Length: 74
Image (tube, rainbow, N blue to C red):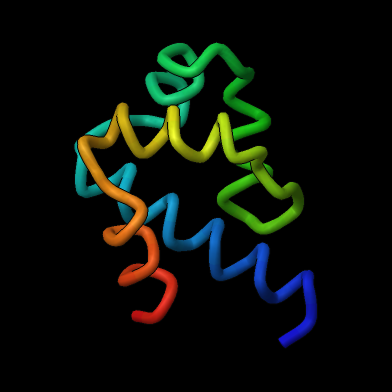
């Protein structure tokens, strides 16, 4: 896997967890203090989130790092 494809898979996994939580990109962005365009870029694999942002998003989705790993593998 190339780094770009890693970011794409991570982004898809974050998007899946967001949808499971019933949140919009705008709601997610407001919760963690970023712009909705940043959430969009993360979910499309164009940006890599910091650990702080990753954990903040997971917390807002009521998800764990294990949940994220399962989504990446899925």
